[in-house]
Length: 244
Ligand code: G3D
Ligand code: MG
Image 1: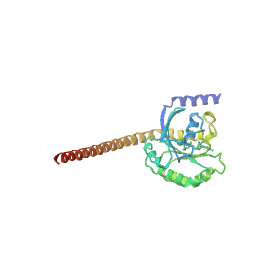
Image 2 (image 1 turned 180 degrees about the horizontal axis):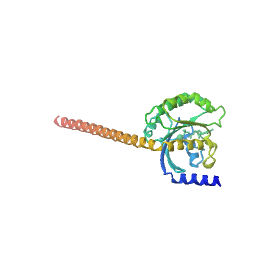
Image 3 (image 1 turned 135 degrees about the vertical axis):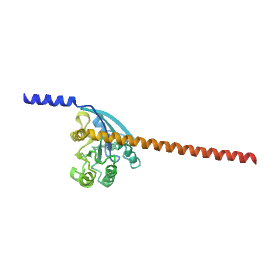
Image 4 (image 1 turned 120 degrees about the vertical axis):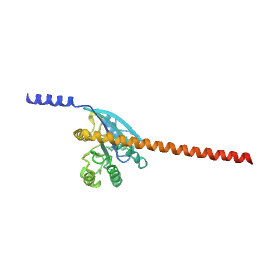
């Protein structure tokens, strides 16, 4: 009886919680398994994924959360687009290919770059130590050591959880439990500090939009000047030719 009442109270509490819109970024090197992971979360087959060109955006619901995940391409040349999404991100999902030992240093450098950003520092980070099904994959402890994860997240005051997992194990309800557990952890941390985090995100995104607007104006001004110069050169050329 007591249990039933407690369950009812919990349900009522959850029902009264406001709907929260949350944006997350999913980053990590190319081939780490980011797209396979989001597809699994979405309930789609994680097999036969094509390399991500640029980014893809996924919307889903989890309890009282409306989540947008940006699955960002991880190739070396497009990694610099990640920073465009930092301001609006409430948390980070960093996917690691635990079986690719040769690229651990590159993975570590990519993670340092992400956490070094003032728009990310202090936000929660979920590390998915993916491809655990592969022979020779590093264990959770080895991934922590290879990435100097403890030092890194402490330095940047990021709460962090690591989950060893396999994105290709299943999808939807059959998704690897560790991925689900990690996502719930991330949402729970975000919920705990939601108001402060939300305020920071509103401030940072307004700042970023103003910066982008300024850059756009500068670009337009540059183009206008180049056109003006070209017009001037062409005109003086035709005047000179007509005089000859
Ligand atoms: P990315 O989005 O991070 O670039 P993808 O990575 O999701 O595109 O995955 C890259 C390759 O790794 C894919 O194989 C995918 O099936 C595979 N993969 C992803 N997660 C796992 C996993 O947990 N275990 C194993 N064994 N493979 C995984 P292909 O062959 O399509 O390139
Ligand atoms: Mg991808």
